[in-house]
Image (cartoon, rainbow, N blue to C red; front, side):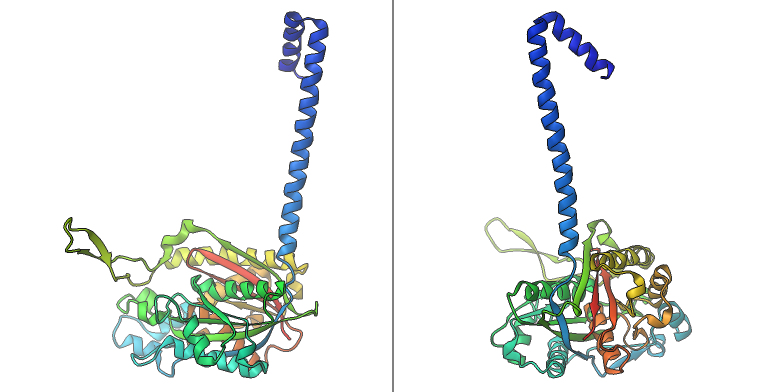
Amino acid sequence: MNLPLLLFNCFVILFVGKTNAFRFLSTIDKRTSRSESTFRNSKSSVTMSRANAAQGKSFLNARIIGSGANTPPNTLSNDDLATFMDTSDEWIFPRTGIRRRHILEPNQSLVDLEVEAAKQALEQSGISPDKLGIIIVCTSTPDEMFGDAGAVALRIGASNAVAYDLTAACSGFLFGLVTAGQFLNSGSYSHALVIGGDALSRWTNWNDRNTAILFGDGAGAIVMEACENNESGILGFAMHTDGNGREHLSMKYSGEEVTLKSSKGHKITSQKYDFMYMTGSEIYKFATTVVPDVINEALQNAGMTIADVDFLLLHQANIRIMDSVAKKLKLPLDKILQNLDEHGNTSAASIPIALEQAVREGKVKKGDVIACAGFGAGLSWGAAIIRWE
């Protein structure tokens, strides 16, 4: 017994009498025991909850059965950029891995790209559009502020699908993949279409050589189906958000002030966003720190290790980020799936575009395990471990 408790016991005995004191102290002992028991049970419950949470982030009965991609035919090379800004291919390529990017022309829409990517994925899957139960369009730059998903569903003939947009910037496709996987795993739907599409050229400041050299436009899509084969599907995943770094990658609303012609002259702001802004050094530090960790977390949830991974598929942001992540994970560089040189950073479209190319070229084969990770504005990041079928 410690000294404060001993003094307290003496005090009780002196002032309330021996018999009553022992009853009083016995009551305290019982309450303390119950409290300690409750605390132990609480700790046990927390531990169990954490274990259940990890288990809940493991296998999802949902696999990819088709992929597609589409980018605008119009390209902007590093040499093209050098004609109107102080830069060069010799400066851009070693720092980013990018040689050109595809950009929409004024008469093109992002929905056009998303629809074509979706049609390719459906054709490869052998699934008719009317079998789709859910469509998730992952984009931060829709043609319409209220979203592109409804227009995509209409144009591909997915008359039975619920369709909505998901906004998580460069993490969008990864988050959409897991979200669709959860719906399929629960039995809510049998087939899903997930599209990643962005038109960042619309929001790029072409006078800022630090960001203008990075971004391009495009769309990629996958068709998923519910499955019962425990050898394929989403084997494990993890997702995170931290708003503390939000200012390092943003496109802020800064509407112009307007005075309404009301009796009180009410003031509002109207119709304007700033150009996209990025603090490159901070995003680099963020990505190279959190991405290896979240991949290991997803692998742990899948009951696997990095030795089980055949390919690393990261959001196509910067070749230096991908090299750094691969080295931290002790993966050889030839296991990185990347197409930065041709497309640059296409935000939510980058992962499905790179995946479609790897599948089309025969690099990714049946049974291969792919560690897939997205990261970007929010700040947000996540990973999923996929076995390709």
